[in-house]
Length: 219
Ligand SMILES: [Zn+2]
Image 1 (tube, rainbow, N blue to C red):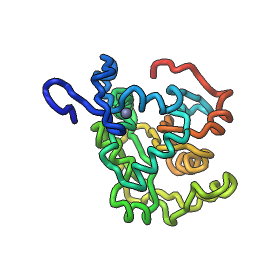
Image 2: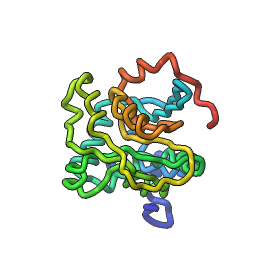
Image 3: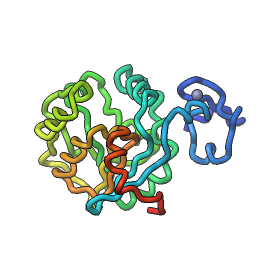
């Protein structure tokens, strides 16, 4: 909890504007950490797709704002902004974590050592939801600079740790961004999950999945 004092003064973690200036009750309940203006730059509403019996939940459509946000967070290591990513979905993810073991995709070992933190673990720690990290990458692939075609090559480097205990629950796979979907498809080969959740997905991926879109019904 980062509520500053007893008068519930809170400040946007991105721009430092007082959140209670445009205070909404629902924001308070969800422990919102962004002002309305910053939050509005996160494009898109939650969307659900069902394909081949698997449910894909996408919170945002990837855009320049999210790109800058992730750069600031991951590459500039602004860990203080961790709570902004998942705080609006805290209750939903908490409920999902009771039914599913939430498994996160990982950074490469090289990046992990350089950053000295695992970004997605920080996201979930900030909302007090337990996650599991059974994957590793054996080579550092600069995915973002590769073409869609070459990104499919990631299947050679995402691997599963041999000795890793997971609880006996169904699997939910989580990643920050789905670009081509190749990394997630590889993860699904290694560990069949029933539900996939991503903070954001690229517009082209969303376009491709449109025929499988469902209304956001109760889970
Ligand atoms: Zn703000």
